[in-house]
Structure formats: structure tokens, C-alpha cells
Image (cartoon, rainbow, N blue to C red; front, side):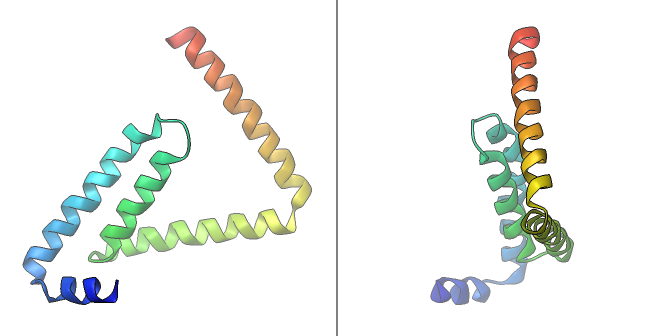
Length: 108
């Protein structure tokens, strides 16, 4: 992996930046499409796109750092407030089931 990274950094920045921009933006735009597939697919594709963009762009690095900070805060909350996190998880599952039922019953 280090060899690939080293060789990639040898590519001129004028070529590297547009390639990274196109690839990362494609993944970020494609994420909502994949989001309809069962599972966390859209979220993973979005985060991968942001991570790719963060290799060359400062604004994407700031977005990535903000997402990581929020993730760490949620993890800290969950580890220190077990009951509340279990209750919130149950509520989220119930709301997801209700939303899915309503969506497939009334919209489709």
C-alpha cells in the first residue's frame, strides 16, 4: 500500500486533483442511490467519497474531521449512558419500522 501511495504522490498535482475530485464526487453523488439498498450502503459510500476527497482538498478534510468528531461524541455518549442509548435505539427501530410501513403502504 505504501508503494501505491508513493507512486500516486509522484503523479503531478494538476492530474491528481481532478482525478480525486471526480472519483470522490462520484461516490458522494452515488451514495443516495445506494442508500435505497438494504443495509448501511449509502453511508459507507458517502464516507468513502469524503475520505477520498480529503486526500487532496482542505474543505473535505474539515468535513471528514467533523464527521469523526460527531462519531466520537456519539460513541462517548453510548458508552457512558447505556440506558438512554438503549431506549433511543429502540425508539429509532420503532420509527424506522413505522416509516417503512407507511412508505410501502401509502406511497408505493
